[in-house]
Image (cartoon, rainbow, N blue to C red; front, side, top):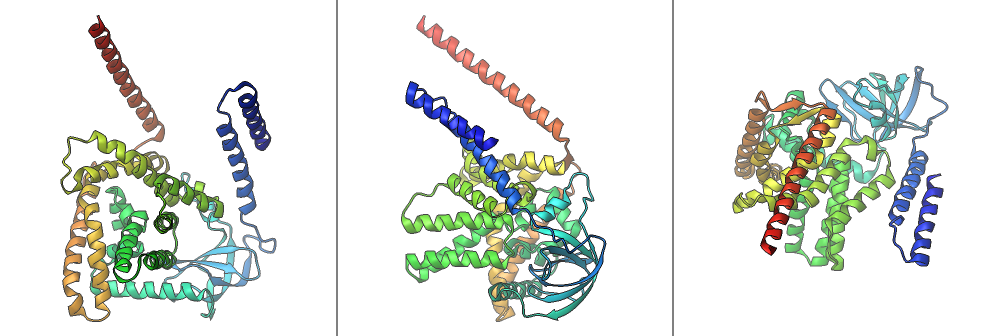
Length: 461
């Protein structure tokens, strides 16, 4: 029906333009309707198939392979496994010991269940469905069959990641080690619920999730290293390859993949000598991801936040910066305030709608920490790298990184402990408040225009 309507609109637009010379702007409406229709069809086509040989509630024995790196949490481990004889992917919740790895072939004995929504405001079923997970096992019996499965490249990259994480743990104490692991590799789980909640309240959760900001810092550093060693063309190729391998090593979250695609578009524009348009690159990255997995558009909050934050940085931050002429340019302070506000304004609606909370202290907390994140990642990385060879060689880098991490943890702890740090906000009330403020500012603007027109009339007289 939508496709038929879009065709009618396109034909009408063509008729009016050719016959009457009128442009009634129906073409873009037709494209929007057609895109929505094709998107709906593609969503249904990509929907996860359900195995007819498995019934929820059955006590079964199946074999599968661990298809993602297990996630260790407080008191349990989450394992994603593809089942060999069935067209399903399952999520297994098991004990932290014994430990399992990506590529392990396992035998699972237990009751298979369908996931259920355990919170009214969180669609857990759809959240799992976006990753193709249609069934659960809760504390089943697991037997290791073989550890020779999985991709050779992915297995070795994950091995390198785990080796690097172990070096971080031997170089720093907690919670410094977990914070650095989150900054460099996105491994934030070991921070624990208390610290994760503090980061959320202070509005700094984005720093411990491997996002586009972190990947941009890493990509820029890699490019500078390669440009100093090889030719420009070779450096672009090696830089692009390094980014892809790094994203595979860190698990390829939605925000990271979005940033990777945009980084690769930057590399391509440099190689071809074309202009890089950040807005077009963002739309293209989002399009690729939605075509690959339509469910991320609706059910993956990390993708939504990452996309909106980048949108805010591209389009809102320049406008905000022009309005902040009273702030000093020194140390790029005005730029930092503008980018922080741009990202926060772009994501505020979604955060309040999804979580019902808003961090009042987010702006000062970000201003006091974000500027130090690149230096923390730099010294933390080389401290960990040199620690492979000699602790004493790494010691100067460890000292500087420890001081920076201590400062950032202090800021998080201080702002999250303030009684007014985070407030619960009803989305409808928030929306009405925004509409009221918008109307208020429009009235002021109209009054200003009216006065300007009166002055012009008086000057003419």
